[in-house]
Length: 323
Image 1 (cartoon, rainbow, N blue to C red):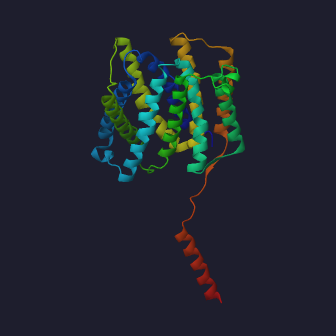
Image 2 (cartoon, one colour):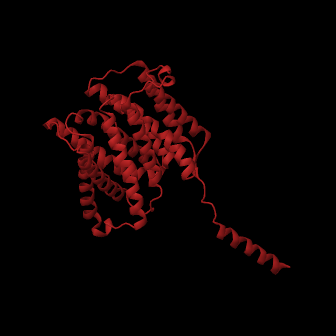
Image 3 (cartoon, helix red, strand yellow):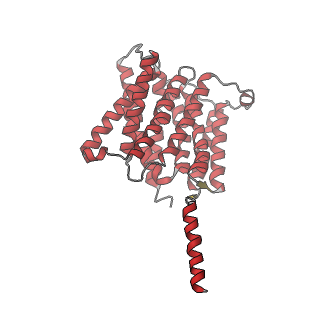
C-alpha cells in the first residue's frame, strides 16, 4: 500500500518543500508591498497561468464546472486564499520567517480533527499517535523548548495570526473533499486563485491598503517563487495528491513545512537554529512517518429516513409473502 502511494507522497513532499519558502518570500516582500497587494497580485498570476494551461490542454470545456462546485470553490477561495494568505503575510510583519514556518505545523492536527467530524475519515490508533508526536514536536519548537511560554501564553500578534491562517488552511482541505470527483486539481487552483485574488483586490481598494513600498530585481525573484512555484506548482500538486491519499494522511506532510522553512531561514536569511529546534524537527518527521503508515478509512454515509422506510416496507412485504 505504501509503495503504491509513494509517488503521491513524493508529490506532497515537493509541495511542502516549496511551501517552506513561502514565509521566506513573504518576509522579504513585506518591505516591498502590502499584504493585500502581495496576495492579490500573486494569485492573479497563478490564475492566469492555470487558466491558460487548462485552455491549451482541454479547451473551453475544461473550464466548465457545475453550479454546486462553483459555490464550493468560492467558499474555498475565502478560507484558503483570502484569509489564509492575508493572515500569513500580515503575521510575517511581526514574527520571523522561521518562527512562522514552525507555527504552521499545527495545521495537520486541526485537519485530522475536522476530517474526523465532517467527512468521517478515521485513523488507526498509531495514526493518532503519529499526529500527537508531530504536534508535540511543533509545540516544542514554538515554545522554544520551554513550555512555560505555552502556559503563560507568551505569543506575539504575528504568531497568533499565523496560527489562525493554518486553521483556515485546514478548513480549505476539508471543504475540497466536497467537490465532485471529476473536477481537476488545475481547475480547483485556478478558480480559487481567481476568486481569492479578486477578494483581496476589492478589500484592498476599500481599505486603501494596496501599497508598493519598493520593488527591486531581487524582490521580483522572490515574487516569482511565491506566485509560480508556491502558487501554481505546489497548489496543483497538493490538490492532486490529497485526493489520492486522504485528508488526514496527506495533511501530515504539512509538518515538514516548518522544517524546510527553518532550513531556508537559516541558510538565506541567516536566522539562528538552536538545539530545541533540531529536537522538535526530529519529533515532527518521526510522527509524520508513523502517521502515513497508519491505516485510515472513511465511514459510509448514513442512510436517509426515506431509505430506511423503504427497507422496512420491503422487509414487511417479504414477511407477508412468506406467511
